[in-house]
Length: 490
Ligand code: ARE
Ligand code: CA
Image (tube, rainbow, N blue to C red; front, side, top):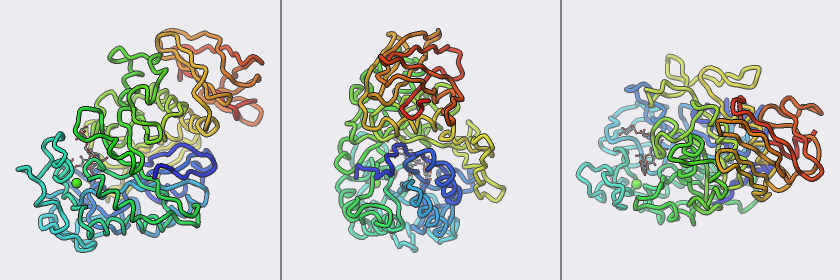
């Protein structure tokens, strides 16, 4: 469950938040495969509640009302077509699985759902699955409100309602079976694994049974006996009763400390300095490498939901955000996930994806220069980020090496003899000769440009036969960092 089953040595996953299936299929073929992205985390594909107050918030998708594969991103045929086309070009699909709960207790009664399926939240009746009140943790939760009131009470966190969401009784065979059927349908269609939403709110023992009943991956695209890749959303910043370690044997786990700390470092808050990241990873108290799923921001904490607070870096802070993403992609720790967002009005954290008047999601518009329009940010297409995803592929398996720092916010490190990166986050110039560990020759910096045939569209870095190279990075450069790798050699 810990292996992403990536193809062709590809490494980074991208979360195409709220993208439609048709757009993801096209993106796999025209961009993700050629650039070497390993896979896509997709938004929840199950039918959800349809909310109008506020108007079509992004978070309505975290309130399933059936397991029909019919969502704001498209219908079952479009989903199947997308999974097939992405798999055919070696890009894996990971599904955001919302299995802890159904819609909110106040979700009402009717057919206000993405595909018009009837449900009754008050009666806990979801006839299309079917789930009835019997399948929810009503009797088990002991809080007065029925909601989670205290995160230090393990029983509450797992048996009560997370922000009023009707909590499934996953200790029951019937409920487990329905959840597993849903996930198995997706596995049979060809997905490579799951982000398991709200895992903190489910008992590890229940999850063990559910994961154990999942099928092996579809052998049309994966080796026989491959288990689905599982990464579980557990927010553990320390100081709560539930710890990520409870979920390690079950699959990977989101490491929320990673983005919170890297944000503090690049913002230079709390006296943090880039030079302190020499032992980045487990040395900073993060979970074991083999368990970690890492990211700079996610769809929650980029807008103030979930864990991390205001240290989290996002595309809104583009300059240091690019540096933080580059740092993550250059560093060997964890399986890395890149965020790809849509723009929203920052005072309205609920705002859904770019949409037409009728609420349907807009197509992702791609400009001639590879960037996106119509409200789609497409961080994964930003040259600096795309090229660092390639860097990660090129240096796979190489050790963290040749560390250098100036005792402040200028640092450099390599990945064996395959790659080297230098950062200047100080308020003055960097001008230094460093041992890169790379074979001698001219290399193209993949931050300011890239290799284009035998030509470099950015800065050229000359590495001597002794592996040493001179780096000059102004603190006022558009991107105050330089990265070279074996495939950027001219
Ligand atoms: C919405 C409304 C609520 C309303 C509810 C039901 O905002 O006011 O009561 O609907 O009507 C997302 C949104 C929620 C939204 C929900 C359902 O973020 O705002 O509720 O969808 O539409 C905890 C969980 C963690 C969870 C975060 C957000 O532990 O699992 O909260 N993250 C996932 C997803 C979210 C999603 C859900 C779960 C629900 O990534 O996008 O919610 O499916 C500390 C704790 C954390 C806690 C955090 C925030 O850091 O350690 O455990 O995270 O505080 O409370
Ligand atoms: Ca629960």
